[in-house]
Image (cartoon, rainbow, N blue to C red):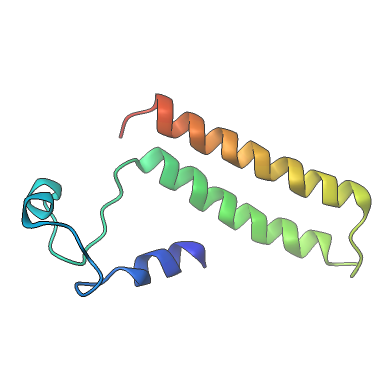
Amino acid sequence: MITGVSIYAVDANSDNRTDDQIEEDGTEKGVKKVLNMMVFTITTTWAVLAYMWLYYVLMDKKVSNIEAYLTLAYFFVLLGMAFAADKYFEG
């Protein structure tokens, strides 16, 4: 969902890059380019896992304390992994 909205949000009318930036990116106006595939992969994987986790947690229509704490912990794991991928991995 988040990835889809992010892709949909940029079009030729809302793309405010200069002509030099467009030429440097090698894309047309309104086209998004993933600069760091590792961060994109981590974010996409965690998005799918989050929906699976949500389904599991809500199967009994009650969220236990441990499920809530695990959900919060997973968020920080995602942040750490995305930060590390952005800072330490190229491409």
